[in-house]
Every structure is written in structure tokens, then in C-alpha cells.
Length: 301
Figure 1 (cartoon, rainbow, N blue to C red):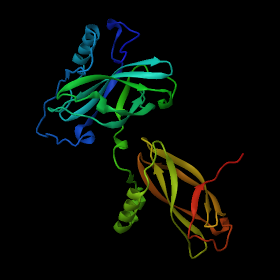
Figure 2 (spheres, rainbow, N blue to C red):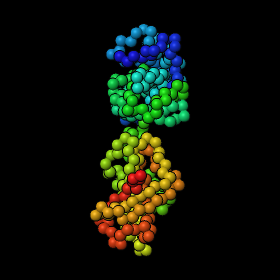
Figure 3 (tube, rainbow, N blue to C red):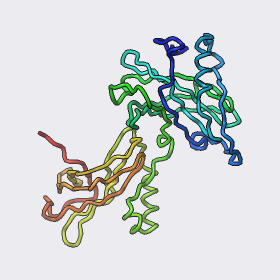
Figure 4 (tube, one colour):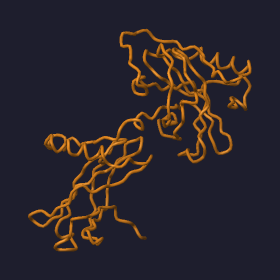
């Protein structure tokens, strides 16, 4: 049993978080009933294995009755309270189901945001532990974010939210810049999309650069096409990037610094980009490009 509201009496508990909701189809393989239009009030559902003291059940019932109704076909996380315990955060929230049928959830990463939508913590939880959540119900749960899941030290007090990281469930996809989308032939777009879908899966929060094509142009420049691969739940903006290229002999054949004008790589996507190293930057006249590598220049100072 979780130690709900350990530091407070029943009359001291108040809801400090806000709600976040997703369409049920984004989390489940359930078919949605689009004919439903009425908002749904959810009834309190205590986990059947819990032996909850009457006082705490009363608190949850009171908090649940004060929740806003959901739209049809929604799964929601309604933040109640954050308590700091040692170096961990205990986050109490209702998991709410506006579908008419019971649902079972699986493993998914949850994000804890402050009032300004900055990520405070992130962690994958096994939500199957909640059991079957009945239709039109709210089930209270405690989500424990240990020290290694915290991204900042400050604990949000008001206006925070707990949210499903839907992007962590969706397949990694190709993100084309507008100019690429307009100019690239459809067959080339499809080749890039296939390449991205077949690459090894990125780790959580991983960002890397992968070379796709390198060739010498007619005027002696080195043209390299790379993929910026973003495994983060948030977009990343690139401003300036010093790069170096190594040939098949693992020798640096070109170095250059590139301004990117806030190039954005969306969450859980790979974006292709081309860098031209002018011939003056080349360190070899006839590099072996049968195997090559591009990487950020390491600052050794």
C-alpha cells in the first residue's frame, strides 16, 4: 500500500496539480465510439487489493467528486499532490477512464511538468499494476520518481501536471524540413523513411548524428548528408555545429563549423541535413569514402 498523504491530515489535502488527457486511441487498441458527445463524470474506483482506511477513502472520494468531467474516449491523469520523500518525489494522481468499458494499461513513460511546462522528471512505469480500470472511473495511484528520474531539484508546488509520453509509444519517424519536403522527389522521401524505420532504436534521451551519404562534387567540395536522430520527448534546436569527417582509414579528412539558424529536430524523429565542406577545408586530395564517419568536433581544452 502506498503511503498516501503521509505528512498531512485529511482536511489538509488539496489538489495542487492540473489534468492532462489523451484520446484513448493513442494509448489503446480500443475502437472509439465517435457518436458519444456527452461529458463523462468518473466514479471513484479503489484497487481491489487495497485495504484503504476509511479516512483516506473519504479524501479520495471528495477529491474525485471535484474533478472536471472528461470528454468521451479519453484517458486522463489528474494530478493531486507531490510529496518529497528523501531524494524521491511521490506523485499522487487519478488515472481516469471515460470509456464505457474497462481498460488495462501497459508500460509507458510518464512526464512530470511544472506550471511552465518544463520537464521535472521522467520515468517508465508499468501501469498494468493498476489492474483493470472500470469504465467511467478514476483510480488513485502513487507514482514514485526516484533521484535518477529527476531532471531538476526544485519541487513544483502548484499547476504541475503528469502526462503520458505518447511519443515514446509511437515509432520513430522521418522529419523533413519544409525545403526538403518541397524539393525532394517522392521516391527519395520513401527511401529516407525506410532507412529511418530500419535503424536501431534510440535509447531514451539519446541524440546522435549518423552519416548517410558522402561524395566529392565536381568542383572538389565534400558533400555530406547526415541524419540528426532525436530520441528525446522534446524537440531539440541546433544553432551552431562544428563537424569533422573521417574516411575509411579513420583519418580526419575535413573539419568545419556550420551555423544552423535554430534548426529544429522534433521529438522522436530523424531529420536529414546536408553539409558542404569546401575544398579548402579538405585535408586529403583523394579520400577513401567507401566507409566514413561524421561527428561533432571534440573540444580538447
